[in-house]
Image (cartoon, rainbow, N blue to C red):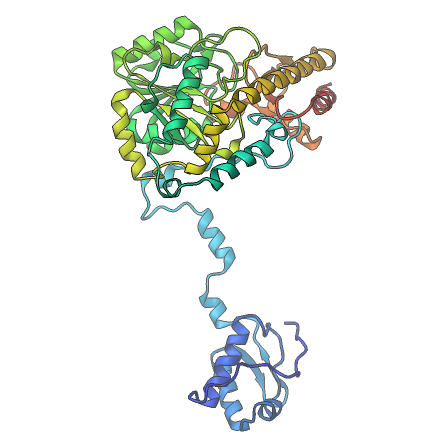
Length: 487
Ligand SMILES: Cc1ncc(COP(=O)(O)O)c(C=O)c1O
């Protein structure tokens, strides 16, 4: 062990006259060692120096050192010096951080629920500045943050004690009204504001629905490929998850594929991740099946605000006459993901049950944020921001398609999409998406291999490419890099 310089005066805390001198010295030196002030290998002052410094007898010091030695804090012999030991007894008693990390990494088995054992972490969003072709993220640099700050500070300045006290488990009533109006006009959702529950994003909507409608062992059908945040959650809840393939019209029926399902999770406006819309006949067939089977449909409307061509089909919820559909949407893609606000539209007979469940969990999402969002919508900023972003993303999509046509033809086939923040590009047979994603990462380009969204067989390999988050120059750079990789 390396020996550290010592011999200088040792600063010890003042002695309480009630404490015997040898006990005080023992405690003080032991404390200094354990707190790291006296590091392993440090030489302690000689008994003679300490005796002079603290006006103690040498016998007192020898007694304290003897106890420290016998307990393993120091070692040495009279004459050759006393040193702090490398391995300290209390250090052995305390948990080593590496052991603690191993304990965390090890899956706990005892004393925790089946849900607790099954639940797996969902990867967080990338926080480095956006680069081509980051999916799922809007153009955050275009968000009117100064305006948001003004609305927030106005709300805070005028905050009543009520605002500081309590909120409704379904959410701030004027916000629920604003969301209901918006959904009725732009998404064809038929609902009363009382059916709207403001939640912390679609993910919380999924959690509440899974908790309230699914028992362990129930069958849940999801799309394949699909959103892993949904399948992971249903699996953690203990559902038997069945992946149903999708085709050009969305979830591929016949309904016999859904036999026995308690709930079907779908993204009908804009299939995640492939991007097609579910056709009207499919929607009607699915609804008819759900009505007959007494099953629920979770309609995830995560980014349908962005439609660049064609007329959007109204939400499935608007076609539902028997209360089978729970509809969820989010402000993560329209405003910004860290806002963590979204909505759940519930069939009327579920409202009170969901309110009860909510009252025992988060109760409601932060009220101040809800009021600011409400002002943002009601005062027209939301509509304006949406129009601006729709135009911007349409331009960015056009840049992507145009540069891909020039540089990637024969190498990568972009699927024709009409909506959303990302598209899919099909790879030539034999080129694995994972390998392309690795090579792209090395060139500071982000693409997600389609394999990650599939549970069953993948008919064709490809990549998910986001086009909304970065400007035209960055999109062109990304296309050039992809062309180099694939060429
Ligand atoms: C298809 C899909 N559904 C739901 C979510 C979750 O959205 P939120 O941020 O509202 O929880 C995401 C997030 O990326 C998503 O891609």
